[in-house]
Length: 278
Image (tube, rainbow, N blue to C red; front, top):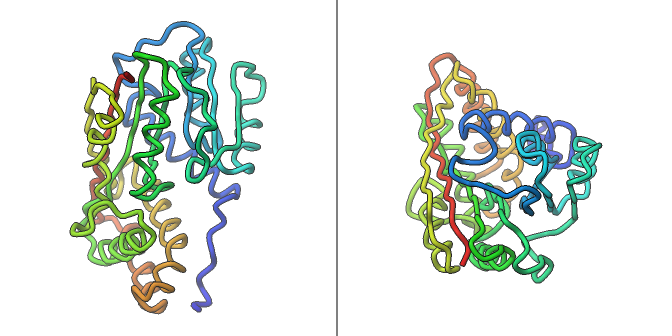
């Protein structure tokens, strides 16, 4: 094992800070917590999936203070952070719930809006359609689902591309790869298919190109995200025989060095969809 490598603690203050930074970048890119065209009544019921430390919920109630928001997450640590972050807001309910394994927990025909983001980081291909179907059942007739996913980036860095290919291969091994013949995750191609399969009517299809190049606002957050991913998937990549640890660690060090350079260029594709529940 490389002496320089340390496992990443996914329940730590460093991870909370990373998620706060990511939310800042996404809020600027998406121009707020909700897309235009979603009109919610006063005291509408909102469900946020995998709420983490509560950053999106905070931005939502800051703009819509009368909403009643339920946030669920599998991490008791993140929920504790969210309770601290959202202290004083009596219209927020936070519950521990693991969408990867638990079914039947959510009440049916309850919510006016379900918000979900980056489910590919949590769920394998075989499970995600079932989760979408259950979330649709939790919606009132005619209410909204707002779903955002992103793909692996395109960059001008060969070490970065190599590292991302190792991470993608590790995702495929654990059933979380969606396009095995491409050097990308592939989840965005499935979104409309699964929503329509659950009976939804699609109303908005929004595409974003996030510039992660050196000097751009999202650059630091992307470098931080890549470092975290490289640590998280290292054990799986090595145990699955994808690459020796010496090669993986060298690729990681070279990729991070090039990404921090002034000449680094990259773009990341993101897709958001708004659907109306049957």
